[in-house]
Length: 115
Length: 113
Image (cartoon, rainbow over all chains, first blue to last red):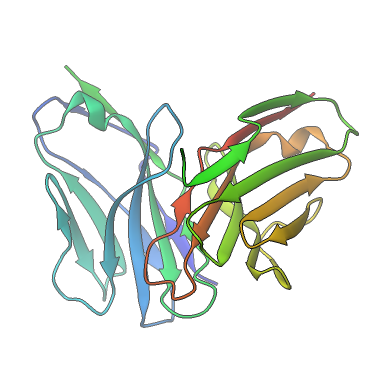
């Protein structure tokens, strides 16, 4: 079975600084997606970024980028120029590209931004 | 209006009661999912459905049942609620191709006393 592990329950960063959230996963499959979701206090689940495993290039979305290391099964999220609005719970998630595409989530990392 | 609507937003009830959480969507998606979120555990899949005749158990289906009344509606029921079912519940949808990420509702916070 696939598993996703986020080993940092909490992280904090100064406003305008850069922070990296870690995620590792375990799978025997070769074709899959990896995601980072943001959950602010409003509790919405907001997609931050998606990476297809067959793409070597790391995905980026404005201030958000990932470091995808397929062999190491690592998928970290870097947030540059942190803003107060980035404060949230962040979840790493995995799904197969084929089939039911059930999402498997990590435990979450709560990110605090210090002004 | 939200694309994926969950009702109620919050609910407090007592042990032993029957509870139904509802999800409706206007995205025209075939696939619908129910997840449960607990602190320190992330989200876990309860049930999922690809159409009204296709219902599948997820990782933690015990104590829950679902009904897919129409393409747009997917309800989750707790036949006899117990306190350890206190959690935040999310409905999500995706299209048949699965080429787009799942789209989540705003969640139902359920507290069972």
